[in-house]
Amino acid sequence: MVSKRLMSCVLASSALLALTACGGGQQQQAPQAPPVSYVVAREQPVTLTTELPGRTAAFETSEVRPQVNGLVLARLFVEGDVVHKGQPLYRIDPAPYEAQVASARAALTRARSSIASSAALARRYGELVKINAIARQEYENAQTSAAQAQADVAAQEAALRSAQIDLARTTIRAPITGRIGRSLFTTGALVSASQAGALATIQRIDPVYVDIQESSADLLKLRQQILSGQLTRDGNARVKLKLEDGSEYGAQGTLRFADVTVDPTTGSQIIRALFPNPNGLLLPGMFVRASLVEGTQAKAMLVPQRAVSRDEKGQPTVLVIGAGNKIEPRTLVSNRTSGDNWIVTGGLKPGDKIIVEGAMMLRPGMPVQGTPWNPNAKPAGAQPQPGQAQTQAK
Image (cartoon, rainbow, N blue to C red; front, side):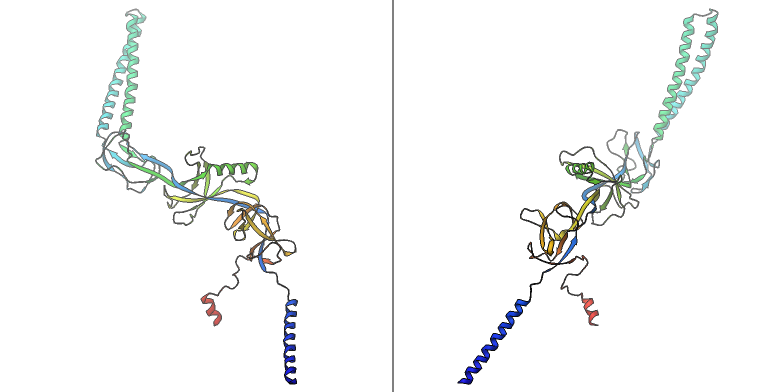
């Protein structure tokens, strides 16, 4: 009986010692501060860009139209080819205009022959009127006839020139250098100088225009920022293009001007940019997206978007590591992004440590262990790729 009691006392004492040891270990271990990654805020010049929809337009466009009436005898170009200024494109039946030239030339010859006789008669009458052999009225009539003959010569010369111009217009030539489209009239068609439709259209597409639509309110805000000195802008603003398939266009363009009229239905203005197009990749009418460099903001801070959250009022906020490595919330002043970053103009001071990773379940005032954020580092617990696992196994 005594041995049983002794054994019970020993077991109870052992259990008490074990509990006492466990309780002492918990009191010795202090809670560890959670690790976080941060970036340091610093002021820097930031280039502001905006992406807007646009349409391409030809640098020059010319409609090929007849300037005389007649039948089309031949088409002298291949549709879709590049034609050069002055190159023959169509030939209209020249026979009626050749006859007009011949008639005008004959009338000019007749007028020149009559001027000689009228001039000679005026000279003779001039001698006779000196000796009072004829009346002065006859002499004045002879002078008038000589002047009319000279006027007739000038009129016939003009008529001949006009007939020659019409004859030359029977060969329709390219007014500009560019790529010509399809022909809307074929050989044998009757055309006239007053017709509504063009024979074909020539477009010069190197370089090419891009017409971009931007809100007039945004343009007004941009002008005000430039005038106030918040933004600086160089003379030749750069523009980049993204094509319909999402690919980037290789060459950069330059901003030329903004239209002086606001579209009352859309409240937008047209901004025109000029792009080189040596390979003809950009065709008139294509839909593109243009990235415009609006200007440079001298003092701004870039904060990664992953570090920004919203409060109950919808305002952007971040957590920073404050004094004593404790969490402090900050409300940001920002209205636009640049790539993967927010452009912050207020709410932060240079040197603030903004928490980027590890901010989940953190509360203001909690102590943390901060390390600089490495955007290229792999997240903790990431599994190796199959190829890497095999290499390590070898």
